[in-house]
Image 1 (tube, rainbow, N blue to C red):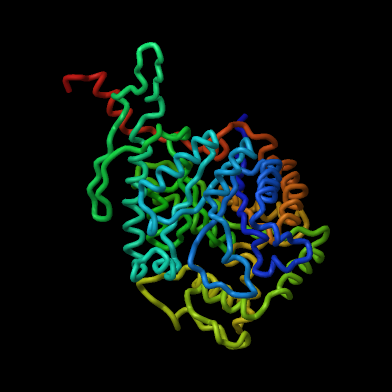
Image 2 (cartoon, rainbow, N blue to C red; image 1 turned 60 degrees about the vertical axis):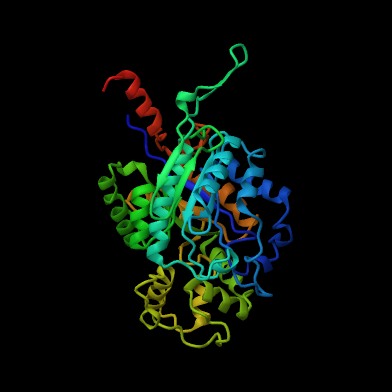
Amino acid sequence: MKMRKKMSLGLFIQLPGQHLASWRHPSSQSHRNYDLDYLIEIAQTAERGKFDMLFIADSVARPVHEHSYSELKLDPLMIMATLTGATKKIGLTVTASTTYNEPFHIARKFGALDHLSKGRAGWNVVTSANDLEATVYGKEKHLSHAERYERAEEFVDVVKKFWFSIEGDAVIANKETGQFLDISKVHPVKHEGKWFRVSGLLDSPAPPQGHPVIVQAGSSEAGKELAARTAEVVFTACQSLKHAQAFYEDLKSRLAKYNRDRDDVKIMPGVYITVGKTEEEARKKREALNKWIMPGAGLLFLSEFTQIDFRGFHPDDPFPDYDTYADPTNPRIRYKIICDIAKREGLKTLRDIYERISSARGHWEVTGTPGQIVDQLEEWFVNGGADGFNVIPPTFPEDLNLIVDEVIPELQRRGLFREEYEGDTLRSHLGLKTPENPNAKKREQLAAYPNS
């Protein structure tokens, strides 16, 4: 009998919680955002829940405001490297920009994370939507949307070349013969493209997973095409099953042109989960958080989210329609999403909007009892809307504990989610193939047919 497909689950870590005002909630531990023991507690709770992976998003150069918390954070790659020793199974996925890094930096750092975690690393590829990032990296201006994605495509190719430059079994370390490396398994990179001209080697063998799992989160045309060509996991924001099904089929249908199978990419929409003993209790919990939002923080958040400066506006000013700020060179996908929400739900003012999106930030929201929540997750999963979900708790640690202790067991009871890890790597959790090293394949072909 064919085994039922299991959904994948990632945990989105935004401390002290995803909601804009989560730091003011009485149960939050916002004073511990930079405390290693606290980070370990969260990671181990997620591993107890058998999540596929932890995920930390990242961006820099965000405006600092006295009422908001999310601008101050630690380097997520450093956090994940530290968590390799405190966890055993759960995947560790981190965001890093292709616009403000060099391919060798990313290859080296994520290759190290994969080795140290014994094959649990994931790289979330982004192109940096925040214009202000240019200034902290000494650039005069941010690259255009089209240029960022063009650079990203070549960037990922070069990173993979570095990961494949020394085959995983090249280290012999034979003390008797004195041979440390099988030099036939060393393949220096020589790349000349529009954006990069590099040569040399990564100074470590190929990562245990072949290479870390490639994650991508863009939903523009350029983002979906980059994902179809390079990604193995796609995070996205969808508001309805119909929207999710359309995105799912659109992206999956693009894979064939790159000689990829539909199962080569797992699509995991974000879902903001508020759990209550009753539906009414859950709804009141969600509404209560909005009362903690300071107007200045709400307007700043809205400015960052839409890339339109609403600072200095009054919270009760009208929210502008998408066409007001339409820019063919910058799709502003998240802005378009909230404009659609505003039209659908009759939201009129800036306050209406920032209260509506301050929780899920454009992602799907599910509110109710554990059974009601799983009903909705199951509907998307079995009807072609998702291969799994990136789970977003409103607060830490309270809401994470509720999800692990009440929602996960209901998923397991219905046979939708694992009860135990069946492998040791992030690829094994997600059911992804191990990538073939093209250099090894070419070497083997030459050995088999030396005169060809």
